[in-house]
Image (cartoon, rainbow, N blue to C red; front, top):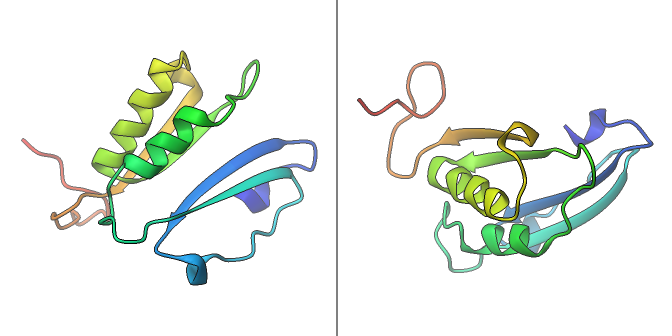
Length: 114
């Protein structure tokens, strides 16, 4: 996604990885602020570090947009954090692509609970 951004775009990217050795070079022409969060001993899908980072990062002005991707409960926590800060739901694009302790459905995303 970052690689497709135009040069005039201003973006903050926050990525959580297991540790410093998991950071990768980001190739983008956009004006990018990169924040790497190291999971350390926290379990995958734990929203605490990302929700904390999103609570502190300056929100984009005007019609800025937030793209959220990750474990289902994590994405929900991030949406709630942004909503509490006043970011309208139509300015977020949430994508939960896995659920902790659950197999994905045949279409590759978390199965819907019914």
